[in-house]
Length: 581
Image: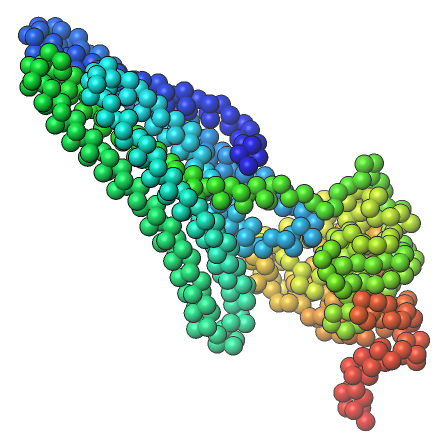
């Protein structure tokens, strides 16, 4: 795990290495200062001149200045290194997620990925900052102070050795008890974030059904659960402070008592006042170092679980990879399904698609219709290789899709979903997702074909109108038409409309289909629809049922010979027929 996280240090290696060096120099300066003070006290006691006092004073000022300088530089390099690591971790995770297949994304909740890129990275950042600075400073301070305490106090310094095992056992118990709680609480954090995300996305539904009280109660329970687990973990970690303070005051009591006794009985021969003051200072240094180490332990305990969660994302390999020698050119828009079986998970008992055989010529317009759960969307997701078939072959342009470069294949297959996404930015910026080099004229032409130009020109800022995140300032139908225009700008060999005209009226739907037939005649067009009116003029219509192809034919053929299609058509046109009668 540590090796995996360390890969993200990269260009921040220099400040990461410089920090421990600067901290070491700072510790050396701090540990020498009490020794100089003890020597000065003894010099004053023996009646030295003012020149000697000024000499030692100058040395002390210089060492304090050096200690301050090294400490400030260490703080700067430490902040640079830790913030750099956090930046690279988020970048590496984001880039990794971008390369995930849909199957990979299905393994992680969106809320969990957000928590890992925010809270978990922050925990690792804080732990790393403490490791390269405090975790170096405290042990060094402990060792140097211990050595200097022996030099100054002799046998009295042995008292410190008896404290360390006691502290070690105490910290071990704290870590053993706290780790499972933190592991548990981070999973609940994911659930809490999922609740927030779901509520915000469905705010209109919540308000329309007046379910605010229910959502508040649900969130309150989740937040209280996280709070309870964190409280239990923090209660355990809180034992660090009293444990450290108990050791600190015990050592101070022993040093003061026995130190005073030795000075009085030996009349300063075995331990003088200067040495005793230095010993007290070193004891404070050692015990404060131990307290700082306990804080490092606390942060590392929290960061360990966060680190594991981050590494899970970084180690997850995409289930879809380019072949060794990928093909970069898609010859045409023909599509072939040869004995295709597909299920979303190896553990799934039921096939999403079963024994699908389908052959589509380049330039054909194909309609797909069927009930909810008939696997219409599953079928088209295999064409652009969003998933790989479980058995059989899917070919585009006569070549198995697994032999193409994924990027090259997807650049030639444009998909417009029913709930397609617009990003925050201007209309032009959203349209250029289809073609980043598109001119204004090309964008206007695509929007006219998608019947989007008519409402865009009514906006005060036209094509420079700013679209809010998720396209909340445009209607559902307007959003769909913009997404269709964006796909048309791509000029793909295959265009898939997955119920993407469901929010527009039938007249606009017909206009869009006529425009596509004229504008991109050589492009294979696949239209998934709930309305038979949307697919009536298709070259062929595929009727899906239970993951299988039930029938293929023209509108007239299916109306005459397929019960499922006829039932759908009749139910949708019954009201109209009754009105005419």
